[in-house]
Length: 264
Picture 1 (cartoon, rainbow, N blue to C red):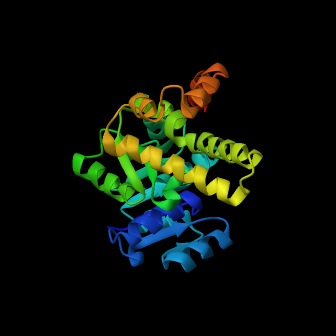
Picture 2 (picture 1 turned 45 degrees about the vertical axis):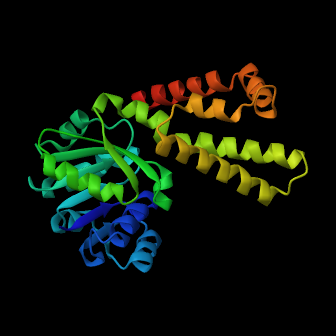
Picture 3 (picture 1 turned 135 degrees about the vertical axis):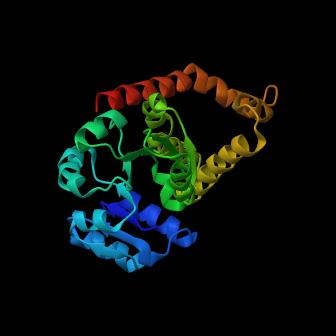
């Protein structure tokens, strides 16, 4: 199975690294194209894959194509490659707002399309990717795409109507988490901790807390209660966060993010 990438930026680089290092695909069977030659040379140097500046060459040689260009370039690139996409080819998209129906219309013919929404922690193999597909994609083909994406973290099949919510809770949320880590560190710096140390303590606390949610299966509220001793320091901090509207701010931020995604 040959895997191709149209667009060789950060997300493509993360997936290429994952599928090669996991042994799912050999580097000789990976192809990438990009209009920016330094980007291509970087993925070739890092991973030893085949590169070209011709998108059509990638389409003609590969069985699975990851369309990893910016959303504003989707129509242009799809019109360029559509005549060369075979009925046996699976096209995997990585962009918010590009529905399966719209993609089918833009391609102008019946092809296999898998829509995905990964996030940037894929760059350290801790990504979360939502996946949905049109009716042309078989169960086995969808499972294979999920296997590829599991090499950069976790992948889960969802109904397409959930994809905009995925953008808010997963696709964009690393930015919110980075803001939270930065704020935690700022607070520690105000209390005299060196900044590098503050980032380390804050980031590890977030990492460990997330791991507890995933591995214990406990409700986040119950885990929170485990930390909050009666009359203690943690419940004091929680009270201030509630007073300042942390929870409602996050909810409204996600709603705004999803609303924006629906308009794209």
